[in-house]
Each structure stands twice: as C-alpha cells, then as structure tokens.
Amino acid sequence: MQSSPATPNSKRSVLSVSDLNREVKQLLEGSIPLLWISGEISNFTVPSSGHWYFSLKDARAQVRCAMFRGRNRSVAFRPQNGREVLIRARVSLYEGRGEFQLIVEHMEEAGFGALMRQLEQLKAKLQAEGLFDSARKRALPYLPTNIGIITSPTGAAIRDMIHVLGRRHPGAQIELWPVAVQGQGAAQQIANAIEKAGRSGRHDLLIVGRGGGSLEDLWPFNEEVVARALATCPIPTISAVGHETDTTVSDLAADLRAPTPSAAAEIASANAAELYQRLENSRLRLYRAIQQQVRHLQQKIMLSRNRLRHPREQLQNRSQRLDHLEMRLLAAGQQQIQQRRNQLAAAQRAFTHYQPQRQLQKKGEQLKFVQSTLQRAAERLLQQKADRLNHQAQLLHNVSPLAVLQRGYAIAKDSQGKPLKDSRTLEINQEIEVQLAQGHFSAKVENISH
Image (cartoon, rainbow, N blue to C red; front, side, top):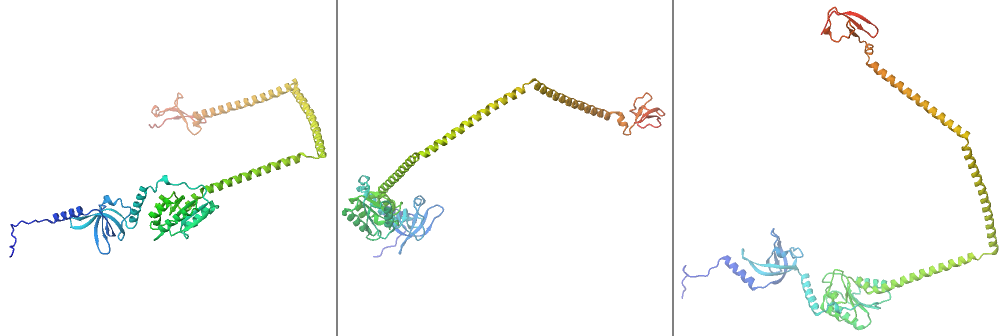
C-alpha cells in the first residue's frame, strides 16, 4: 500500500534554526554538569571585550572554548598557544553559529594544578584527624647528644647540617639514615627510616628533610605515609624541606618546621651554642679577673720594694732635704729684704711727687701748653676770617660793573649821569658820556636804531 504524498494542509512540527539551537543548548547545559577537562591551548585570542576565546585539543580532537572577562581575571597565569591546562567548564552551544563549545569557569596549569588539588585534599583530611594540632607538638630536647638525620647521603643538605652542627654543637653525635628524597618509592623509604630511627632508642632528636626543588621534587614529603610516620614518631622531630617559601605536609606533621636544613641544624644546636657562649664568656671573665689580680699583686710588691730603702739612702735623702730647706730660708730672707727696699723706693717717689717745687714746675708746663694751644687757635681763627674776607671781596668784584668794563665793555650815560638803557630815549645830536675801564669821553648821537 502506497502512502499518499503530504498535502499542504497536513500538520507538521516545524522548528526554526534559532529554536533548534536554543533547544539543543538548553539540553546540553541542563543534562551535563561541570566537567574537569585537560588539553592543549590553540588559536588563543583576546578581543577588546577582554573575553578569551581558544580551542582545547589533544592528539585526536579539539573543542571551542570561551572564558568571559569576569572569570578570567582570577587566572594566575597568561594562557599561551601550546600550553597544557586543566579547566573546569560547562558544555554549551553558541546559538549564532550552532557551534558546540565549552564555557570555562576555572583554569589552572595542567600537572601542577592537579598536584596542588591533591595536596589540599590531603591537608584537609589530616587536619580533620588532628595530625597538625599544636597541642600534640612536643618540645625539643634542651641539649640533644645524639641527633638522627634522614636525608639523601649525597645532597648538599646533609653537608650543610653536619657543618652547622660541628660548629655550634661539636659534642653531639650525628647519625645519618640515608634515603632517596625524590622519585618513585622515596616516600616509603622516608617513612620506614622515621619508624626505624624512632624505635632504635639511640636519638634524642630526629631531623627529616632535603634541599630545594620543584613541587614534583618535594612531593615525597607531601605523601600521607610520611606525615603519619612523623606524627607517630616517639621522639621529637624537625621537618626541614626545601626553602623558606616551601611548606610541605611533613612540615605540618612534625613537631617543628625549619625553613631550611641549615636552619634545622641551628635550631637543634641553639641551646648548645648558647651554653658554649656562656662558657666562653665565663672563661673570659675568669681570665680577666686573674689578670687583674696578678697586676694588683705586682703593684703591691713594687710598692713594698720601694718602701724598703737602705739607711745610707735615707740619710742622704734627709741631708738633701735639709740643704733644700736652707736654700729656701735664704731665698725667703732675700725676698723679704728686696720687698722692703721696693716699698722704701716707692715711698720716696711718692714724697718727691708731692713737693711744692715739683708741683709749680708741673703747673708751669701746663700753662705753657695752654698758651701755645690758645695762640695756635687764634692764628687759625684769624686765617679763617682773612680767607673768608678775600672770598667775599672776590665775589663782590665779580659782580661789580667795573669788572665788566675790564672785559672791554662800556657804560653810556646821559647828561645827568644816568645809565642809558633804551635807544628810544635818545635824540639825534644828543650829548652823552661813555665810561670805559680806564677813563671816559663825550660823544654825540648821529644815528639811532631801535
């Protein structure tokens, strides 16, 4: 039986492309939870929006990924093409192109991130059991006489610790428990050595550690078996793993954490070094006290020796002192005589100073001096007055009409003897007198110019 072809009136369930993509997106996001996925980054791009777009691939497949700006700000490193990463993402679909993609919520470097996650889980587990509680930590012995060290026999850590202990606590015995400190099986070796050293009963203190390295190199000290061995060890323990910035599970489980192996040796020998220093200080104080006492006794011997003199030497000293006193007496007498003489001479000079003849002579000399001073003052005053008179005469001469005539000028006067000042007062054939510097003459006016 053949089916008839569908007619336009037949009812069909038709979806648009947008509806299809939206349904598929909701299906993917609703049915698949957040996933941890590892892979290699490729085609990494960062547009102006700040979002990250890249592909995550392995040897056989790849998938598009998007990590939005609000999420990628918390990533501690800058992704690059070819870098292995571990992401936590949700499966989704980009509706605009119908492309399957991952929306990344978290990103970390592959390998390192996995180890860190494993480490945090172990720390949380042991913390919950109380292995890290400070209440169970034991105090270190005051002066450990036998120190066990669990580390590599060929590393720099054992050399550094032996050097520090030899310098600061030379009386202590050191026993090395050689183990592998990295690689496969290293954690079990370290745990076995801790248990054996604790059961041996030979040690007062146990140091477990190694030098610096990567997280993978230090990983044996992050194993649970090592942490439990330290926590159950019957003798006090110091964990000294890596550098100051490295903190391992063994650091948390041991009774004390040292930032470096050398620091662990210094901590173990701290009381011994202090004791040695106190002994050295006491030795120095005793030596100085003995020296001071010896010097004091030597000074007493020298003083007693100086006091024990021969009688002849004492007689000579007394005779010399007698001579000295005699010379002092003579000198004192001569000084008294000279002082009396000086007083007599001073009295004579004073008497001579107050005689009338001497006073008259002194007053006469003062009178002569005053007369001479007055005469010189009068002569200076007369000279000043004469100079001033000459100066005034010169000034008067300079403004005198006669002085003007001396320079070739003449003075015209009318018949009354008055100086002529204006030609308009003159008349033709008028008689005038002309005064020269030397003499005068009469003249008649012939021409007048105004």
